[in-house]
Length: 353
Ligand code: COA
Image (cartoon, rainbow, N blue to C red; front, side):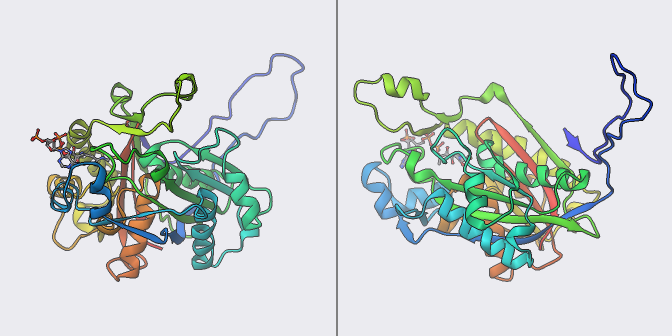
């Protein structure tokens, strides 16, 4: 489904007490939005393949060849979801030149804030010193950051907020089994934030997003909390993944979605400067780039090599690295595409802040 300009019909009827005044329900302001600043947090501890293979009968060579990962980051006890989020958010605000008090929306994409309720977003808002912004979490797994950017774009264009922090944050090391051969070497921790705000020219293209609930079980928490507590010796539930099926789906279905996002932005693939796919696996990235026939000049994000797969945090972390290393510069056109559990996906073309 492609979302373009959002309009809301203003026609309606009232059941009783007809009023002479007309309701004004129009939500179209004509505002444009863009990513104004990015920020990230990488946990301190670097974990090499030699450490994760201890429990999974694997090798550094196998992991590098199958995923591209050499090292990943695992958060320490003090590097909580809230801590990493506020660190990334402060950097995004600083880079955008926007004060926390100007933020009127915070959207946090995560699957590893392990308190069922409340959401972590209001606590992050309070720590940042924001002034009672709308603040909520979304659960779209690895696709969450691109969902958040799309929601922020639509909210700003509709006039329901002006400056929105979109945060992707994960501590997947808390919910990954160290002895699961299919996931132990993949998942990692970190945070990224984008400050989305008003812009004279549109900096965020139409989103192409959706889900495939027929494949709900391909990546999931192994059991629900009621089953966990019913166990005689409860253990932390972990993520499980049917890797080969996920690989096929991501490589082929997501190439079509990526192309749709480029088309929806009204550009050609050759107009792109940067390709920032979810850092799931370098082989998926290669297959997507081939399927899209990306020209040589399009630089491709490879943050996964030193960072692992950080789910909702992976795209801002990857884009920030490209900016740091001079592979992406302000004004460049970047295609972002994220996909994962659900299965859920979202893609859009953005201007690099
Ligand atoms: N280390 C060493 N060998 C392993 C292994 C590991 N961690 N995991 C599996 N193997 C072995 C299997 O035993 C099997 O050996 P065999 O051929 O002798 O029987 C072989 O590798 C293939 O097993 P399979 O489970 O089919 O692995 P795969 O080729 O599908 O590779 C992944 C596993 C996880 C690397 C791959 O499926 C993948 O990259 N999937 C996408 C995952 C992903 O990106 N997810 C993120 C989405 S958000």
